[in-house]
Image (tube, rainbow, N blue to C red; front, side, top):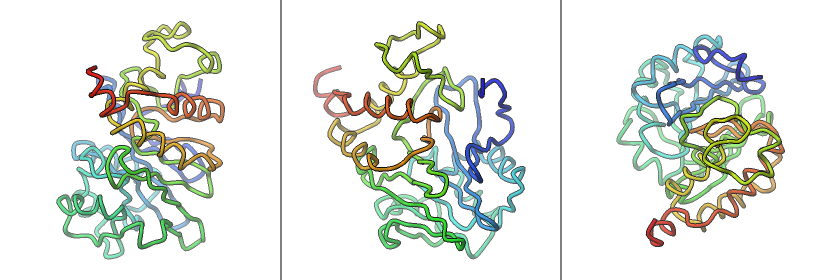
Length: 271
């Protein structure tokens, strides 16, 4: 029901002060999800998106009532162009000396090729924490080689939203902002076509994405173990749909932890 009520031409507030500001392309199977976190007069933008999506993303940011100049940090959880492509446009429109780009040092090496204008901060130098002036904190958790050396996820301590980057992502033309996985799916044996919805199975879409994008079974399992202790309300991936109930989150985590033949392991087996 929640998906039927959404207008993807507008921003969507997924938690208090946390906004999806992405571009919903019905013809694409690969949906990229930038997120805006607003705290008082400050804002940060996580994985701001591709060059071609810049106009849509910035318009949605402004429609939230956010002055672009209040964005003090651009956070990039890895360095792929679908996250970083619009950095120069973001810098030009935000046009603030206070703006900094925040990522892992392994990523900043490559992010420098998108931007020479803004100062780069490394999460390692910040004790893996960004603190708003209000005291609210974003915690950064390293997930190396899931799928790049400097990959990490971001946890908002206020709303308990986990911005999971490629972890929990999916490549699936059957897309809605909130996952269509329902309680009946949690104990099923996934098939290409869901017996309930008649559409492509979103669990299969998540599995296939991780098999192709993550580097190895060991890297994926390590990443999942890093978030085991977190109290998570929503998983907000950079690709695919939000996992928005604790039952769905736990089920998908368990299924991914048991996934085999990921990345190089899959390749060496000859699939």
